[in-house]
View (tube, helix red, strand yellow):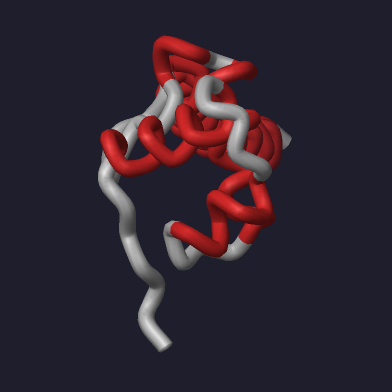
Length: 96
């Protein structure tokens, strides 16, 4: 079974059914042919970060992009540290 993808607009309208029109999550999920836990998660996203809710395929929230950048930097710094450790051990061995 392949995973279905929904547009940002569809998600926003589905959440509006629940928040603005007062339709229950269970009923809205049945009407839209969704699993209710998916609709619950969608409903919680705008509350957590209204401007960056439902970023879409390939788009990251600012925090996620920053974390990814920092992870790359940490990996690079660890590699540099390991090289310096090996070089220090090599030169210490040469000096004796």
